[in-house]
Length: 310
Image (cartoon, rainbow, N blue to C red):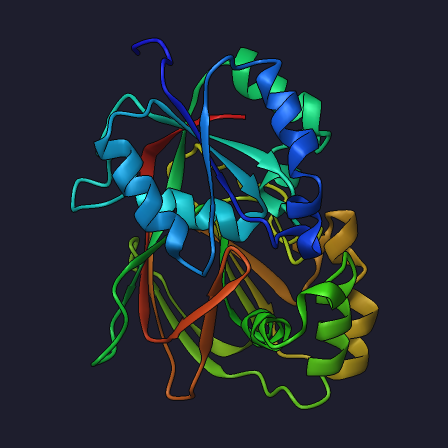
């Protein structure tokens, strides 16, 4: 790899309920201690970071550093992974992340300290890793363009919670917002009938409360949905949670925070490089904490397609 010579930060000022914008000068001063020269830009609307990153890579920047949460990371990764080859426009470029979001679940799953100075130091002094990403191809007519995700894509109640949170004012989104949203959603949520077909020819059918296609291990503001998932092993951990009644959901949700969810009888974990998911019901999707699209969809793991410095 060529040495890093051009650094650009992509900052989401409204992440962490607006705290990122308020403490930007502190973040900028810390970055100056590790990089003598760098440029930065603030995003102003959703998905803008993807277009910004594509232009930066075409301009020859070697290191793109995101400042924000999982949504910011997702948008930046989608900027890297343009085209059918699933490779950055600049193949030597790498991605770093200064975690400054309400969730930052991918960072949690990678066990990276969320301290600002430590995260910047890790980007500067740590070694580069190649990680996988997931690609979602929507199979319905008139569907959106394919999207990539870095951490977890989810169909079922998780997607409904994320949709609910998307309508919640940013200032009210805190560490327990996802769990509060879960409690609100279970009263009316009906687990859909789902059919899953994996690349190994396995077919799974049933009513599922959660279907998590996990590249990383943590989602929903600290819920350990796939404790054995690794973002560099070339496959997903598909976590399927059977339909259950509201009181059972509340009782068993504690397992999501202890990392023992996979030990529950109502939970099955299937490893797959790709899978297709169908339903006769209207089932929404979310990926990396952002709502988007509906089933049917194909999920494909793209191995070692992102260079990251965390």
